Image 1 (cartoon, rainbow, N blue to C red):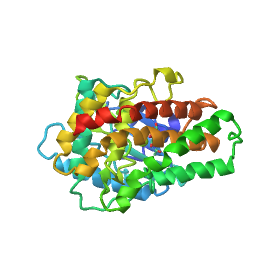
Image 2 (cartoon, rainbow, N blue to C red):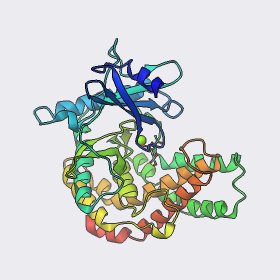
Image 3 (spheres, helix red, strand yellow):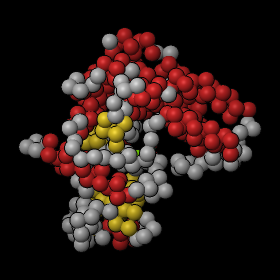
Image 4 (cartoon, rainbow, N blue to C red):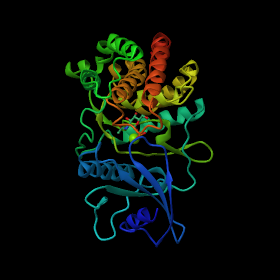
Length: 356
Ligand code: GN1
Ligand code: MG
């Protein structure tokens, strides 16, 4: 932790660092809470450079997005609790520090906020509004944002990556009959799930600036359960609105965590779906097209499916991408996400009739 405190000292914090502790359970970056002698709090993050290859672009996106939202919120109360504030370096305006090996950035800690892993229908409604408003606020950005992970939510690419993983079979896991069965099931849905990319090529589905990682744990709530702020802006980039709708459904809509090994407990929660959808549709009325709206049930299925494909490809590759806690972790996650996907598929009509 001493090393982390030293790194924190490169940023323009208000006083010497008093304590540092690890926070969060992200699968990609490492995060630490930093408290200074004055009691001010900060979040220091080590950026996973193997995944975010263009750190300058990453920081550029984050700077543009937070500045844009800050302008939109001008005049509102408590702005620093509603949008992240990047802390520059002590001796420059740059927002990223590197020792040539790792890359670090810092934001101000948002006081009296909590993250949650599960939501109620009531907080889902507010989350739907918050993520919808996030997209609405960014819908008139003039700065160009790049894709911090190119083709991040492109299902065609994820399908290809899975096939490449299978062809290489780097960890020798493909001979397992269960792996073969999952693979066969995934392949049978692949075409249907690649529909978004086709609609985009046909010119009927636009890309907009989206958050692209709208899991419940990426929002801060106050003690009363109101959404304060959307966090984890690494993947804010042009994408289909399905990304934000779908990933929230995938995480909040699942009655258990994405890595719960007891797949008998996996179930899609229609109350969460209805509440989030109501909030989201209210907030996005000004720009959402009918094609986007009609395909929200598809988005709810696409995201557990895409996540299953990603976890599964990582399992086959020998766990090179997601952090794992035990050897079968990615397989357990895959089973869980496929179970959720099947359940969402069985509720498509019910979802459609709620939306239309
Ligand atoms: C990763 O690091 P974290 O937990 O915010 C991943 C998301 C996945 C998620 C699954 C850059 O997010 O796309 O949905 O794990 N982020 C990246 O839990 O790949
Ligand atoms: Mg993330």
